Image 1 (cartoon, rainbow, N blue to C red):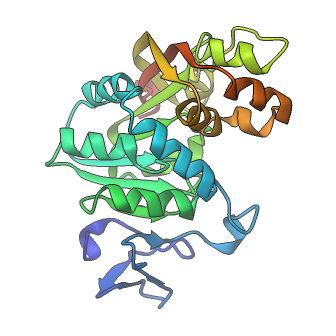
Image 2 (cartoon, rainbow, N blue to C red; image 1 turned 30 degrees about the horizontal axis):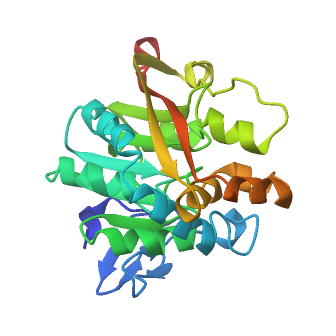
Length: 276
């Protein structure tokens, strides 16, 4: 994306952004630079809850190391199969870009935007592909023109329906991926005393926001992860890293390998027909 046809808007005034070399500017002269890595930072100071929100460099490195093993490739393949068409695709909470890059290669004619609040994650994403527009921005209000996105992807990311509603075209679709109740159960059994079947089902929240579920797909399989750095990388890319005591991490490091249940659920949503 290199000009006003990009569909990007100024996060301050929501007017179109026009590219002039490596700088993006709106009619009110709010300007944003393209970083040397290739991303555009459209995250405003008042949209941050900390100085450097989102995944830090260590977590990005862990995600990259683990995802590059291909263990989660079946999840990516299921996502790619569920995207119905080309057009403009927005991946909200794209992280370091593993799923986004594989989707872009699957649909090379699509115009793909990857958005994350973490600058470190987007730096990692830029190393994956130069064919994707990478943004540091808020998913609560994506800096794209209203109703300009044909498909929105939300993978393992908290749902923000107002932002989805703003960005999605009238006939567009939203695809979510969330953990199922048995996801990484064996890892959780190692690091917690009390482990329960738990997952997240987004349907009720999306229905309340005016969307209807038109497809659900469950992806389950087992995968063996080698002990040491590979297993630690998986642990460090999950929210569990913030909750577990150091002695439990030591226990995890003592394991030679671990066979895990992978359990995720994909949902596809459209606007409810009675709200159009």
